[in-house]
Amino acid sequence: MSLFAQPTKPIKTITTMVDIILFLIMNSPSFVILYSLLFYITATLLKQEQANILIKNSHPVTLSGSFHIAYH
Image (tube, rainbow, N blue to C red; front, side, top):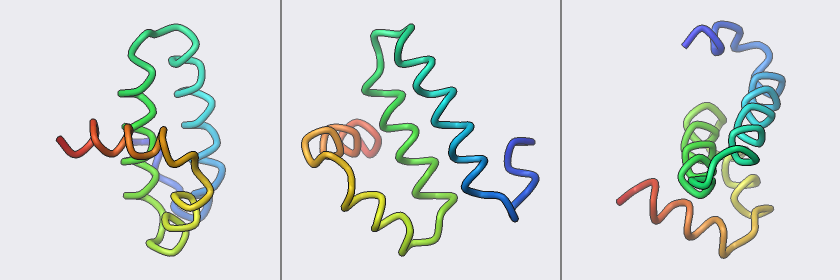
């Protein structure tokens, strides 16, 4: 968890994680699981208000599928 050692730069950390996840998506068939993991980590790290904004700006079909896998 050394990636999260700098809490003053959460957006840069999230951006780096997104880049890593996107790279894995392009090289892995299990992109839905990786995408749900990204949402779970993001919602955990961000404040609740920021997480709500992220959820509202996300595609509803993909989001529902992500949370279905992440929480079941």
